[in-house]
Length: 364
Image 1 (cartoon, rainbow, N blue to C red):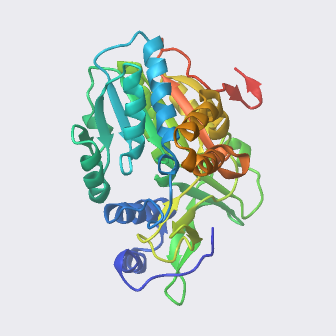
Image 2 (image 1 turned 45 degrees about the vertical axis):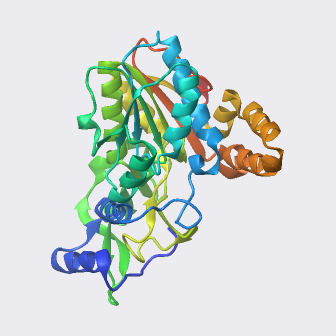
Image 3 (image 1 turned 180 degrees about the vertical axis):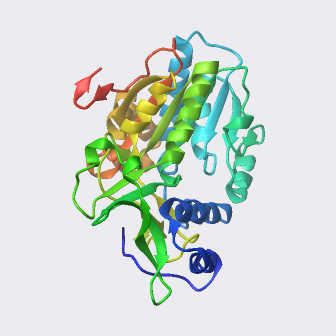
């Protein structure tokens, strides 16, 4: 975490302070869920004037290649009709615009469905996609046709649960108040040994195990939908391929990491996505795990180099910016390695282009 032990005088911080003073510490998951709900409901966080920039805002190539990936797997699945494009947390609608434009050239013109709860972002999406249908969650999606689901930087904002190894055993990591009234992480009082994976049972004091039941539930629901209806899904986010120890919870405001506990509801709280666990969740629900690859390798396999060259030839004055965007999306020290792409599909659907089925160093 980027510093610990600050509070804010008003807003959600005041609500949390009263709650903790009255009933005791709250869980990290509770803190993160409420903070992000307040944060996303009130603003457009994207772009240079916002708090962070996502891949679709860096270059049109990102969305275009996603659209071509969807069109390719749809074609090889037999071109089922009707079919839905579903995006979870679609931001400003930029990714959908670029993806659907590219997909349409390959004959894929699906219904458009967005899962979004932010009034601020929903208004921007309506301007870009007036024909779309909006949902607060997956439950309202059509049940009678295949789904092509895209979730870019969606899972990282879902709440995480943290367990910490103390001298007295495993406890849930909570948010409490210090003597000055600032928020600080504290260990809960209830034993939590039953919630810790067996291979972490004997780690040393201070170790933190981080899980995201909310992310697992989301992937399970998507996988179940694919099994029942057909289709495929892409989850793109920053994270790791196998479970690891330690807290990855961070806060970003104005493109800088800030204190997680300083101003809840005023910064974007995220945590790394455990793609290895989520692949297992999807398979247990009956879906096909198509593989998980680094974003850079995946975009390269889909032809981002050729697309960048084509764009540069069409607009020579923008060639330098196009090259910079390509590097940012694909370079190992930029977004190329930290960001992962996980593909899922219904049983009977084909493999996904550019994805690698590697688990614990073994190709499967």
